[in-house]
Image 1 (spheres, chains in turn blue, purple):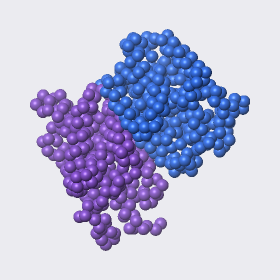
Image 2 (cartoon, chains in turn cyan, brown):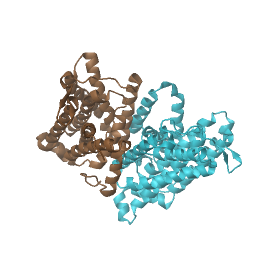
Image 3 (cartoon, rainbow over the protein chains, first blue to last red):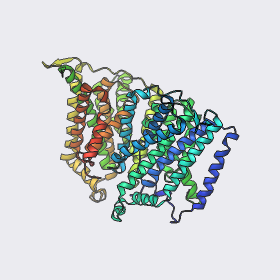
Image 4 (cartoon, each protein chain N blue to C red):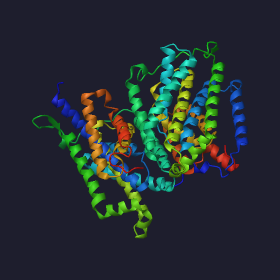
Length: 323
Length: 291
């Protein structure tokens, strides 16, 4: 049985760190000049939040071989908690972000302990069911305001002096948040922890026989992934200024999967590219109503049948590089 | 605590009906998973297609409910077989997860197309004449149609169990699930069997769709949320045994019905909560083998 990311695993054992450095530099420069190019900054900020979310998701599927079909629950939970903290408790932005991320951390500990009890296909179904459970809870809980969601969330001043209602300032804060999250994930992938995770993905019984407590590694990966997804959700609150049920719904979880699949499962930069591609597509096709869903479905089918490496995976394959 | 018996029994009946849908759908999922190693995410969308098929047969061709009961599963089953031949068969040898992603994509396509033409509101489908009205059982009035759904589903479930566990065809099927290469060596056409199995599983989903059309209205998203509950049912029951799927499906429906009476706020979530509890106590599922 081939594993889901087999296509993108480089044949060389030594990781070509230099390529990744160059790609990272290009990405950072591109993102830094955005405010000066006239590209709609809110579009890019939204893209950055989803890119971080997809990177966090990719940590699980791409390196741990665990397909979570419920990652929207971390996005939505952190969004609700941060939004509530800002609007109702009046907390400053930095504490609201901490609160949202902490909520996602707590949720990922609980759901992780439950979900890692089964593998493969069951893991996907369990995470989906757990996120649906949470969806119904948020639908009825008073603080989420049900169908309306939390609206008109104030952005406030970060550390008391950085005014987040200024679009350019907000852009650089979101960018900084994205880069921090991205580098944490990159560090995790390239650490001994990441290597063990890949070993578990390739052959779990063998990793067990080598003495690794694989459940602990999987749980840790799940918590890291869920917490960072929550961090993305907390950042997104400042961009969208609302927190709603769409962020917890299974369609959102599906979109996260799609972004990562399009960009390239198990590639470092794939989820970032995929997130921007999907967000751009939604933006341009917004007038076509439900046909967007149909197109997303077609992309899913096409990717699985003919394009399993994804955009970045294909590029890497073409140049025989790991990105 | 006062118990309002008629209301309790009414909820119990609703629970049994939902349970029959859970049973029919999880049965199909289990059969498909056994042969194709794919969790069919499109199952909810195909269930919806079954209901729409009944609606079209009635409104375009004038064919009534009884025709729909036979023709819908066949039509949707053939659609499923075409899908298996054109899309799913290319996935053999790949990770299970690709099957989930592919069928999720198919579900999005089907549901999106139907939403475009029919919006999100429900289309009415009348209860057939012969099944209208209610019977007085002495302690409650039983709407005939609802009683029919439960009994008919149970019969279909048991027939499927009989087909798979007690016939020669079923024996071949089970053998092919265990070791397709060896079964092929005996001269049995396994790829054709896989296609037919997918058709059977999908047909069961479509049948559930027809049964639910007069109760739940015909809506493009009627299967979207249902399939997630059915996934939880599958996690609880495990996919190891056919009878296990049937029993788990009906039992969870009844529990959900009881929850609707005693604590309605939790009726949407009770199946998921039970899933969590089962995972904590017996991770491999109630009837499943450890995977």
